Amino acid sequence: MSHGFDTLQIHAGAQPDPATGARQTPIYQTTAYVFRDADHAAALFNLQEVGFIYSRLTNPTVAVLQERIATLEGGAGAVCCSSGHAAQIMALFPLMQPGCNIVASTRLYGGTVTQFSQTIKRFGWSATFVDFDDTDAVKAAIDENTRAVFCESVANPGGYITDLDAISAISNDAGVPLIVDNTSATPYLCRPFEHGASLVVHSTTKYLTGNGTVTGGVVVDSGTFDWSASDKFPSLSQPEPAYHGLKFHETFGPLAFTFHGIAVGLRDLGMTMNPQGAHYTLMGIETLSLRMQRHVENAQKVAAWLEADDRIESVTYAGLPSSPYYDRVEKICPKGAGGLFTFAVKGGYEACIKLVNALEIFSHVANLGDTRSLIIHSASTTHRQLSPEQQKAAGAEPNMVRVSIGIEDADDLIADLDQALTQATA
Ligand SMILES: *Cc1c(COP(=O)(O)O)cnc(C)c1O
Image (cartoon, rainbow, N blue to C red; front, side, top):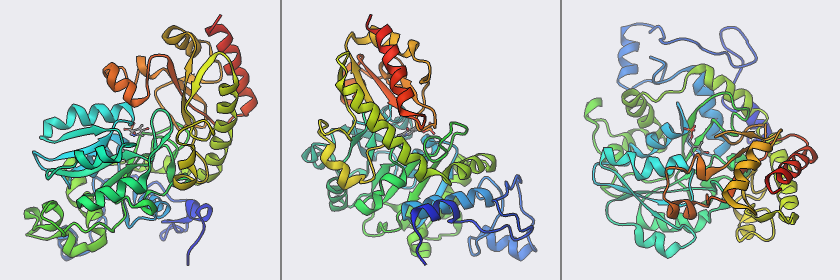
């Protein structure tokens, strides 16, 4: 039986608690699970039987969230992690070895640019950054050591839309998976697997939870990538010494990446989501579609108002006909271009600083995807570690602020921006 998105966001993965009948998914606040007997324990440890051993690996509350998100994305399985950044490492870990690289978009969350350009070098991995609007450049950047292509569907900070079909055609030709960070779009607005992506990652900290309460992440596998088609992915296609020579892809088929993520990734890296965190995200996800509709509606109104205001130099929202990404909205995220965009203020860096200080409803925070409207001056905060060239490429220039439009009354948001712009540009 197939259900609509609004039904699945409430029901997928969950059922009344078999022990108590509890209708809402209980928070299984436990570290370990009693084995039926010694044979049961041995079968679980050998991966011959699926079940609960220890909450670093699996937990019933977290498992419901994993199935919920996998279903909403149309994937085969998912692994929840302690943060969005943890999810990115967990997505790359099975694919990479020292000397391998990824080809990544220049338009990414600032923390991801730092993770990919600096920190992953410590593992012997590297990233080549290219403009993903230039498909020839993406093609040219892929070499024999490339193991993944990485981009955001609706990209930070400007809400730019990536042509996922064009990019996945290139990555599939090269025999490597396309990983899409779908945080800003959510599966309600964009379903990357329908555009050829192989893996999706999320910071569940953002819209999926939706109310700024917990940090979390998830890796979702489409189940469609053939890990055995080449010798590029030995962790998935070759015998795993820690499991008596078990081959994950041969044994688990479309669930190979998910099982590897739990049995090796969470077991050894330990970037586990806790059951309390999963609970908050499950609460948030129940209203995802309703919130996203309002985020989009408000973002559209606020962006149009800003664009018409003469204190504003430019607005990047892809839902505006003036955006170079406007035509991609219908193809990639037909229900709307999300709630995230940047705008440039006349008066530059100084005016931006005054604006964030003068706003009353908007909060100046390093977050997005909250019910509350948020603003940040990227150049002095999230994108501060980047060079001026990287800031420009990422769309985080000094005269720009990024907004994450919340679900308050649009008229109140516009009035707040109006009074703050008056102070900022006085
Ligand atoms: C926030 C964010 C991340 C990082 O997620 P955390 O949960 O903060 O670790 C990654 N990508 C995007 C697009 C984000 O917005």
